Image (cartoon, rainbow, N blue to C red; front, side, top):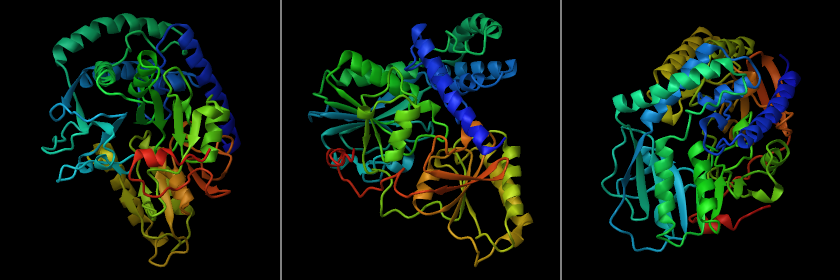
Length: 457
């Protein structure tokens, strides 16, 4: 499949995805929060199955796998446990619902948000609701009074499994008989975690004079549910989604839908154009600000590295693509490459196997590497990564290795400021036509108030 054909399929599939969401809303599905409407091209979620059904025939084995996976999710994300200090007398005007890793909490009790690159202590008019997805994370003994830590908690497995399983067969048997556009089954409702999180957040609006609800936005179902309910119950509260990294290469998950925020913030004019022209957003709904996360004073953290994603499929194709790239590289052309795993998947067995296979290929083709390489500042990305555009904007030579070109690769029919070069079936090289179009690198901002005033357009 050549690059132009991939691009044409992507454009057509975006149109099908928009039509699908419109149809589901007409049929009374909650497109804001139903997992079948989170049409992610990169994550192994239920919506990924639905997305692929719009383009290909889905086998029954995949249907069984994803349905069972959704049942498990409803068990795994079943409860929330809230950790907060004593009743806070401070008057807050803004709520930020964000997420963290253990290293975001310092020993002195301070919290540094990884998405906005700001400290909670510098934003005392903001109440930070911090979601902890790491079940092994220990709640810090000390944390700031304007921080509430929320951790998900599993439910009773036997009781919950029997309850869901009793409903599963009825809907599943019906799904096998339906067309590929009818995969969003009735049993795939909002997770109880999402409902309880929404109820807790909404309850805060009756306590504090909140003017803004802000989220680092990835169009996840719980985020859309929060925005939708806030708009419904508290229409005077402004809902803002900050796309803290980049929209995905095939950006079907960012299609405008019921539950999208009032305003969405991006950090590049060409990213705004994609959202207007391909994803159904209106010009006035999109703000362009200098990036809060990507700063001018940051170095290229991906230089001379092989960067692994959070999720990938068909590792045999990825390894083949990596070997093809090494074969096509001349002797002594490449710098020695380090492997950078995704921080949220450090202990993944699947990732560790892939890392070892890459190491073995580096040894096999050791003649390709040199301490004085011809090609410097190279970044090799596996599968989907928002960091690809960041590396390009910082001047890196970017190689992209993937297993699913339609769902994982960038294409100039969507990304018009990008030049895409074919290396092999699963390997592309990217270059920017002009710098600064996708990312305006920002300066250090201490407060959200100051940053939000830096609107470019």
